[in-house]
Image 1 (cartoon, rainbow, N blue to C red):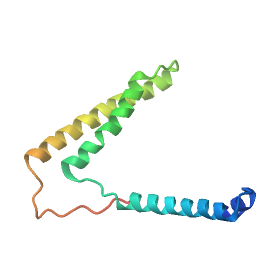
Image 2 (spheres, rainbow, N blue to C red):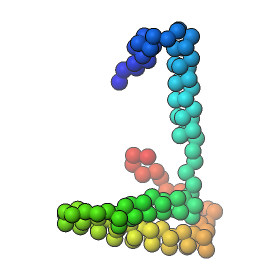
Image 3 (cartoon, one colour):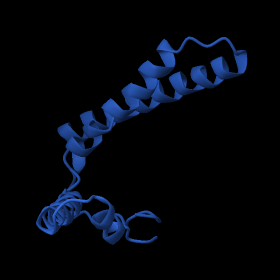
Length: 116
């Protein structure tokens, strides 16, 4: 991947001060965005489980509201609906059990899964 900022600065035709300001703003925006993305802490426990319910709900609603004519696509959508309903139900049951019986304080955390 090549950095194209020098070429961008040549073709904008603005003053050097304006180009430098644009470049500095772009670098600042990138730096702040990366810092925010890496400083976000994923919630754990019941709160972490509840966070994924909207994600599954979007897939469920999209599949339910899809107007498809191809029966093969309809079967795929039906499979999504069944899977997401099971997932949401399992998440809600897990959240309920986590809220009624918290994890012991001496429990060891699981290692990250490959790719994380």
